[in-house]
Image (cartoon, rainbow, N blue to C red):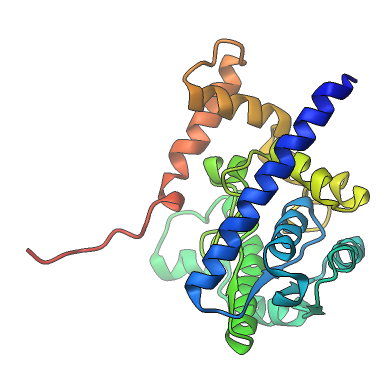
Length: 271
């Protein structure tokens, strides 16, 4: 490894961390709120946001909420490690029972099919997605409940790679007040994580939204984050000559089909 390059990358990552921290500090002051509230999942994105928030306003003005829902126990362990590393007060709210209770009263795919007179049931992928999105939407409601109690504003943990392809749940993890790392590709999130002291075992964990047992982001997306970053950067710069054409086409389809997630809600205005 070229130590000069690694030192340069670390310097840039620290500068970026300082910029985001200053922005967060200004945003909290402008909002008039007392603190930041965020969900800690045990993954690198939420760990970086937690560290940047503590860097911005002090750990005592950040409140982390861990929200397992029949989750892998290691998720909670990693989240607790992050809270401890940055000295952030945290609480655990187990959403397993609420998730199960909501599922119990929701109509099944065949029920909806019958009531609407549809000729066929929705595809299995659509049913799985509808079910998986219950968790992030319950977590969003939980974070805002906690934020209301402590005069907080909710921090999102989405990065640029995920935002560009729409890999987030509308009104779930996409339902937040501020997005501190939404202009950072996944590789940049890793660089900032190393620079601000995110525990190494969290940095090395396979990214997962915890939507179901064994789920990983890269398996679900079907492309590694490194390849996604390279492809998206090529699309953004207008130069995809070095990218695989099939991957470029697939990623561009992801970007186009998720455009509605990145736009403000269309509003009717009277003439």
